Image 1 (cartoon, rainbow, N blue to C red):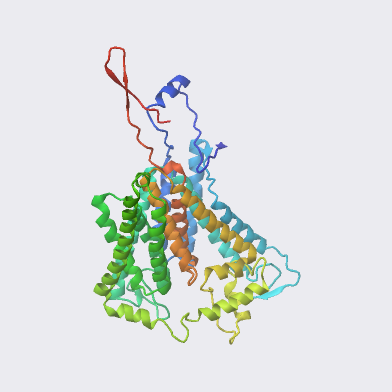
Image 2 (cartoon, rainbow, N blue to C red):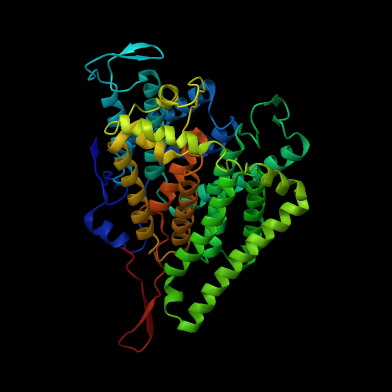
Length: 495
């Protein structure tokens, strides 16, 4: 078995007994496509199923759901090995976004080493590891490793335009169905999940126990129809359908009354207006300046129409109660709803552990020690992912996270230069979804929900997939004159 890699995915080296001259002749008549084994088809199916089931299982935050999620990752590994055995070639990706995830795993492993000179008292006794909560760090490492498997598998097995279309449609259709389900449940049983499970201490929405996490999930799903519309990658006869799908997702997001979610949605739309105006299609670049200004004006008009439509839709479905509930959620004595205190305590933790942090997942244990109030209030998350990365991973962890964000934008904008309009639209759409979640991460911790983290990484993969998912440009047949004056058709070379 051999391993061969290219700029994005691996090239498939399969033994071919066809004579060299015959292969050279036949290559002029067809475009090389990756060979799909039965194992690769099932691996792609597992990825699509995981996107759906991880959200339906309360966002995959319970141990039983995490166990099934990890089992899915193990299944992908087995199928990956079977695919490599069948092809005689191990397919791996050289996408640079995998490196920060590997670095985060390495950081977590280092934090589990017994490098602390004086043992520190933890929730589970004395520990001399760098992590102040080694048990939680191990759990985070398992979850992070499983997410990396799903991410790497998406980069490898989404290797054709057809699979790209299928994955994008799966996310859009499921996002639309999830939005309808969330709206229906909010009208008929707002305090229960699946009309059965009562949640007196939290506000659920759809299958999610936390309404903010539902809003974060919608930010990722709505990005695809919105981005394709703004990028001009949707056929005219389908545009109203895409507007309707995006509108229902947006209404469901606003109905959660999540301030961070609404701010992120507005930022997402503004981001799409700006980025699609800069990364125009090849045909738009050839147009006159006045025509380009009309295109920009059309995008601004679409953005304004969407925001107005969302406002009208929320009023029509939820009445003024939804906006009253949104306003009532703002405590004018403390508009941050306690977050300012959480963040100040987190800064104290960062000052005390600046280099390698307190350990991945250790925030809940460490917080009570530095809390300036009674010290009995346990906070699991900092309600700001950036501060928590600093707290859990120190400066090293912050650099790892920053490198992921920088690489994401660099690779996605590079893919947005594609001549394939659909590929360009998906790259910009997926990047806008990731951008919205990154904005939301200033106020909440949606990426700590497994389903949201999975969809975020799959969306990042959609934004940065290599050229194998692009439709080959069609070349016109050239006419040549023979000696007798009759025209003959020359078959173009598509190699």
